[in-house]
Image (cartoon, one colour):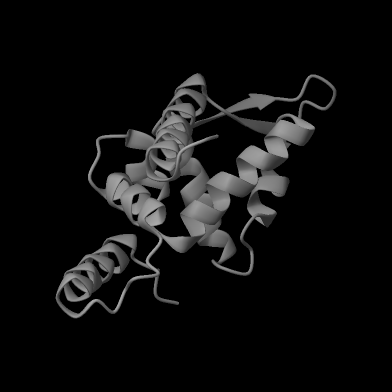
Length: 147
């Protein structure tokens, strides 16, 4: 399965924007979305550089954070279930291990069951996600006004 490239997507979007200026064929373009996508590629946010690289990694990050918010730390098996329809188990295991080694996720041993590994986001991940979220809301307000 070939990974979805956000860089290729944004490149296509930018070329369409140029066409839109010349041909006026993109009057319904969501300017807010275009601004956010451009910022996502053209920034130094370490979290986005790692997690917004493939469709699976975007899906994993957002699903993981939502589940973490509701349930707390997730077991390794729960993490491996995220995106099972998108990537092989081996790929998902390697991705989780890489996320841990880069300092985006951390693992701890469960206090109740010493055989169980629990995974949670690091402070760095939460901080970088909050920065991205703030930019999203700022861009939305600048583009459309209001909250």
